[in-house]
Image (cartoon, rainbow, N blue to C red):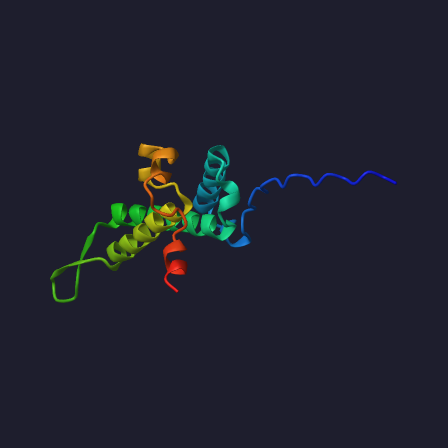
Length: 137
């Protein structure tokens, strides 16, 4: 009778770059850097590829809005001659807010970089952002 095989330990597979990010070189670069960072931190198996892709896309958008606003300025003159803030300023703020939200979701926000993962996880708060919602029922 043959001896049963031991189950192999599952290795975290490296997320692949989604096809819709391949057109955007900035998002592609951020995606690869984020995967590398999470792999080194040992958190790659805890995150979703789509979360990394969303973070990468938001970072690319922030960069594009920054370049646009640097070239054209934060204000414009309307048809009445009044100075107005460009719509891209608000769009940049929204993209920046999304970037911060995704960074927190992935565990790569400033708090984690400054304090370290051990201290951040010992605060008594659940690391899973949806854990509080699941407990409410």
